[in-house]
Length: 501
Image 1 (cartoon, rainbow, N blue to C red):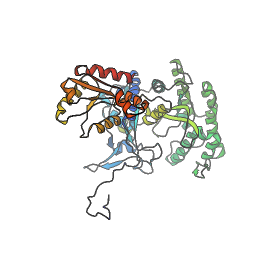
Image 2 (image 1 turned 120 degrees about the horizontal axis):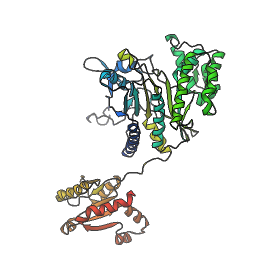
Image 3 (image 1 turned 135 degrees about the vertical axis):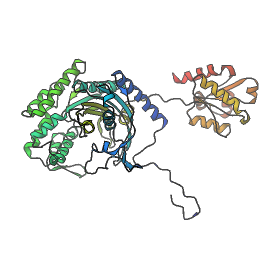
Image 4 (image 1 turned 135 degrees about the horizontal axis):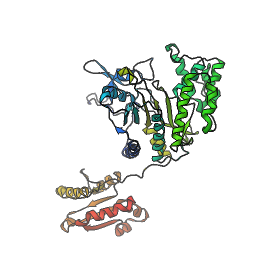
């Protein structure tokens, strides 16, 4: 932004640059996203959820208690003070604003309250490849339903949404676990889940368990013990558990491997003697019975001990939507695509406002990640044609060209009149850059005869590629036709139909 040495009188101008961790999104990707959101919305509406929009900014104390990094209260959020010196933050997710909304409007809302919401969320975290500070989520939540059927429904909703988007059975699985089971396993390993003194170690253990799919039992055992060194030499400190405690946790994680149909029964012996874990397993068994009765087998919704979920407010069933097909990662390795969404039960979140337990459960889709998954499967929509461009051949007749443009628009045809000041050649280049399928041309001679010329740019490009010299091109006048002005709408529709089929 500083002036140069050569020209100290030059005005100070800002350098155009994106903030780190943010990105611009162009028309093609936005349209893909909008089409995807419409499909998700249709499924959520079919399940009876109603839309709700909350602000992108909340008071920091509404969000702060639920940030992932409690050691640094401002870590994770973008915050500022208002004129009253109260701290405000950009929302970190869509769940904390929902909790605030329900607490404020509790007496007026139907119980259970079923809502869906989509919008940008913001993370004040270090950006990286594919990791942005602003991204879109699409959530569905049921508040006020204590029944485990609400959690089973969330899993069915997730499966139906993925299939509606074109992801085939066998290419995804909704993996389910229960925080009560996880806490019970930690208790068996000697960790006091209720003690603040053990909170850091509990989090380290849960993070290690979350790596089971990636590192296996041996890798997780290292993370539960002294720590693990990766291939690059980087060392991750461990939880420093003793051997027996490590064996209890890895035994629990390993027990569910194999046939999903009998996974719950195989895990039961590994949690014997812990009442909390037994209660969580009973909830999982009920969920399994419910989804199976509704036609969702373990190939679609299945118990998986490695599902942890990061946020601390989950209190019961937790679930992840994982895509199981293979892709190449940034290092060229063949890996599973992985998680595109998740959620779980959070019965204590609203209580921090009301002082009363309010049961709730929800599911959230990471929109950008799911969009990338659909692209890798070739599920992208066909590129949308640009607008029909009406060229301005005579600057004194702009009103006539505007009339032609409005005639097309009134007929439901996407159209624009060229608004620049360049000549015909530059206008044609503009139409090409806009992805226009055809242009409308009317000079003074054509106007006198009540005619217009339509030039099909797509067919013209094909024909021009096959023509050898300029003379041949002029004689052929490829994909260009003169018509009466009153035929404009019907002829334009005919030409567009050739390219939209």
